[in-house]
Length: 74
Image (cartoon, rainbow, N blue to C red; front, side, top):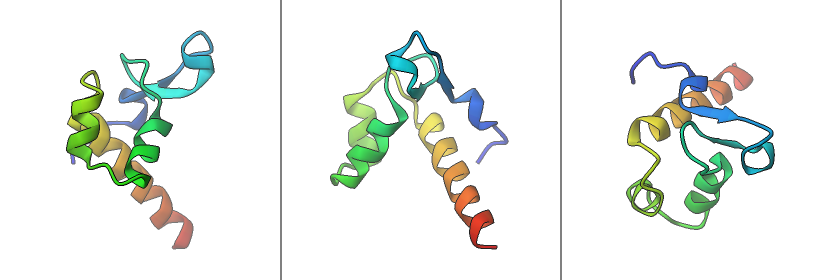
């Protein structure tokens, strides 16, 4: 994956969506992505349902989540 910083793809603003983490440039909460995956949706379905979110944003988020988990167990 490209060398993109996590905060280039997500943002948090108290005036947007009650301060929840959202995909940058959207009002789509990051939590909605994980909830949809948990409920069985594919990444492609999520991107179709939330057209403002890009595949790059999702991939960077997943890469950083995996890196965080890997660091925790190392």
